[in-house]
Length: 204
Picture (cartoon, rainbow, N blue to C red):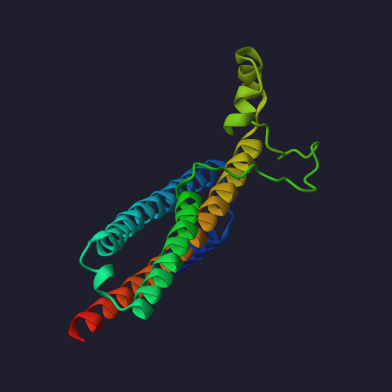
């Protein structure tokens, strides 16, 4: 009977521990793990953007080859030649437009943390010891002094602010990447339309 009571007490203690707030060091480790995950998402977005640029380069190369071959355009009737020129003009505009989204998806931008109405005299207000712009705004001695005065609550708050900024950056790149792949789909359709015109003209 005593062993059953002790097992029940152990289960209750485990449940209470699982429901209790984490301490400062556990919070620090969890925030660092979250930051690593945010960096991994940004790195994944960068790889997907580079892959999209490779696909875009292949499509552009195919389009250039198609319109610069001397036997293609002169062999077309004047009305179809006008259609090909129109499609290629639209293709060039679309390619340039979505190239800008590729730049937006890969540019090394950052989001400056916005602390809003967070009072500066709050005990957990970020001290500015991790974010690079806060670091370089001090001389080495002032920076070391800030580290000596920072509390665990302030350090964790700054980590949370950094994670929030990284997630905003990841979301911005994700939206730019989605538009970039939409552009690739449109460019593929335009290039396919161009191929259909050439094949139809050759068959006729």
